[in-house]
Length: 588
Image (cartoon, rainbow, N blue to C red; front, side, top):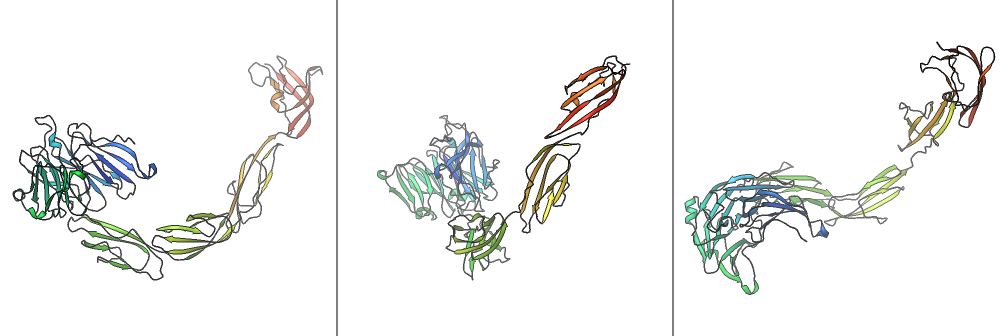
């Protein structure tokens, strides 16, 4: 799988992996430039281990953290709260150090910026930034940083670090012999000794000395030979492993002064070992920060329960949610308990919480309309088995009966929850089919719901079993029975209303103003017509059987008489009417 991460395999600290706090799956991969190409800067990518079948995959890639140019120095330090982390980068041609805070919300893009003893320039006689080469390391107690340069204005820099704020202070620069190139660094497990490699040399410095001059004067050579010394790494066994190419060597007692540190050369010879100049970039710094030993969840299933909560020794100011101030407390009830403690070496405070749950058989009585949702979820439970072979903690039950589920916790508690379930039916409700039709002049329809306890209609929130409607529209009613079960039904009434009798115009103004100049029978809503119009002398002047015809007299002042029959259709009904009416025509 091609990832295309920035960075380079030959970079001193080519990559750093930081877990996202409070996440089991998300990791940050931080990469930096090599010294001969410092054009990209330090970037990070995000890996989600839930993807790709559990092998993990990249969700975000090469997000800029520190702009170019940067050195090959890159280190991770645990925050003194024991949860968060710091990422430290070192820009090139600058004395600045950038500390980026990593929390459960992600990497904070704005760093805490501090300054060391001197800016290392990006130039030398070979045209390559050798000042950028060499390790940046953090002490296990998280209180110090050290940077070593292959070739620089100063060769070794020691700085104080505040793992609560990310601030770097009190930088001191140390010069080392010019004919050796600095590369590897490691602090002792007790953070009181610093080891530095230069060519074929390993120096030890005693950091317990109170002044800069005393620290410089404490320098002791613990190894000097032909073999080139490169990277050094503090192991989980408290030993410092050293690459003395082409072999692997070890400092067996790195907390001890001088030769008593017991350097041992060639513990893994060339025949079985092949390596480069460096070790993987582990998080050494702050490993002695706050680590509380209380579990997140405790479950118990015995009637009488007693549990001692202990966040661990070596802290101060134990403040419990119960009001107690001792290192340990004993509890015998379920609930949520927390303790606030202080790390005396850093002054950093932290809070840890534990949730205590009592597993015990329980019985429930549940009822509902159509179905009931039951939730048997228990924190820390690993198995749910219902008597009818359902294996989920939450389920919908749609039939009355007794249901039982066996629940097993991580610690082996086994309990049974019993649910006595009664299912009530919703009330029967049917307003009938939608109504479509036609009515003469007006209509009235009664809508009636079946027997229930409560009724609520959409018309003015009317509360009644039945209502009368006189207008087309959509109507609904909500009914509730004695068990609180509800039903809703809707009916649409789509009717037309036609007049029972037509009134024909009795005045026509034939004056070319476009208003009331004719009788348009087609606009009167009639379907059949047999009409005759006579003048005042009884002469037939207009006759029609077309219900869409128009009589338009022109310049014919006078009185006329209309007589005939017409039909109005309304759905399946029709009415036949007789028309007899005088019509006055005015043309002036």
